[in-house]
Amino acid sequence: MRVDLKRAGVALVASTLLLVGCANSGGDAALVEVTGTNDGCEPSESVLDAGKIDFEFTNEADDISELYVLRENGDVVSEVENVSTGTSRTLTVDLAEGDYVLNCKPGQNGDGISTEISVTGDGGQEQATPDRTITFDAHDFGYDGIEGLDEIAAGETIRFEMTNSGEQAHEFEVLLPDGEALGEVASINPGDQGGATLTFDESGEYMFQCILVDESTGKPHTELGMVGSFTVSQA
Ligand SMILES: [Cu+2]
Image (cartoon, rainbow, N blue to C red; front, side, top):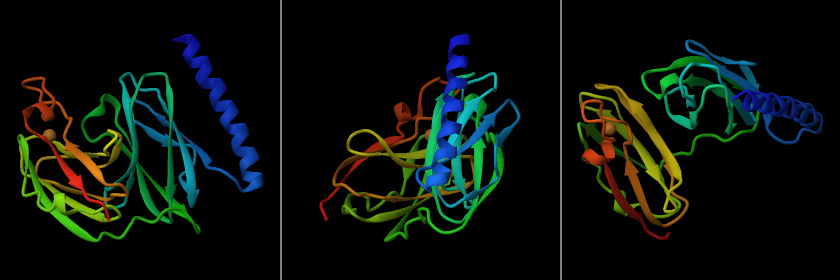
């Protein structure tokens, strides 16, 4: 553990030096350190320049943690999970002007701790404009009313709007044909709504799932029915 902490410290210094170099050349991502504690989620800066940003997340909480970068409407821009106590992970995002939220989640459940940040200036990736919207329900344990998934063609951007009509939190994570995450409607509490705008660049077989764990059975929701697949056709 002591060695890991030292390594993390060295990496931090190296990254900071890199940032100084990049700031001069106008090159790569800017580095922002985010420190997560049991009751805090503190960025080193809260007003950032538009463009690529490396959030270096250091987990100083007592439990395993994760960091989300959220849009003002709650959409997930990106996230990093399974960050052990005393370690750091970097999350790279490309943000256009606007207000965003950093959400640290020690214990990897519940609402976590949110800190607002703002991004100013030109550049960065705007959220894509959807070609259409798919509205559906999540419940214990399944998804209702998801229609039109098999009609998606490569290149399309789909807005997913999910209502949680269940008794516990649910999510809707979409996996690419290679199993990597494309994006997600992050964990939504009972009675709440959430969304995601996802662009399907490639054709093939995609999966969707909720991997939250049911406390009474100890089983992930995938095992209780919250999983499925669909095919994205060629453009
Ligand atoms: Cu679920």
